[in-house]
Amino acid sequence: MESAYKYEVYSKATQPRSGVVAPGSVGQPLRFSAPPEFGGKTGVWTPEHLFVSALASCYVSTFSGMAALSKFNFSCLEVEAEGTLQTDAGGWKFTEIRLKPVLKIVHEEDRERGARLLDKAERSCLIARSITATVELEPEIRVVPEPALVEQMQ
Image (cartoon, rainbow, N blue to C red; front, side, top):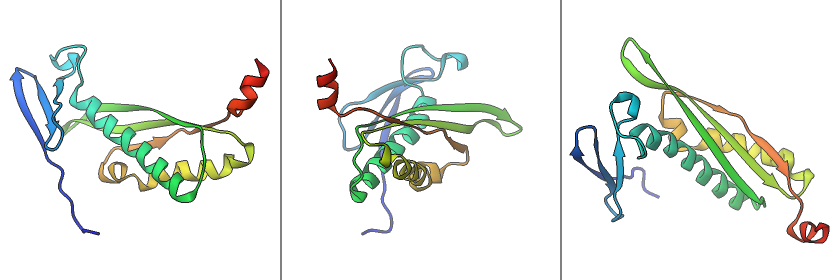
């Protein structure tokens, strides 16, 4: 395995405080703007959304990869992420990002193992390890009935 990788993106201004960005290897650009509170447009992605979504998507891919390697079966993982942007003497920066994963499992006996994997994924996520903002994990684990049982109950 290599010891370093590079990821390139291309970004272009389309008007003041707005533009497009695309990974070099993916053709579809993503429109973005500064947030409305900073003079940007409403209804489009912002760099702040992209930053928080980078952490959320890294967490999901880290967890699901670890679960596959561990042969841990789960029904669903959904993550809500909320970043707090604050100003200090140096200017605006993210000070905290809350990850609120909801892990759905079929068997109660998988709860403890699921909790350990959720914690390990946060510690292992490369985006979380690369930022200065505090990452707070607020996990929830729900036991959901197997689909066959749901059909029988109806």
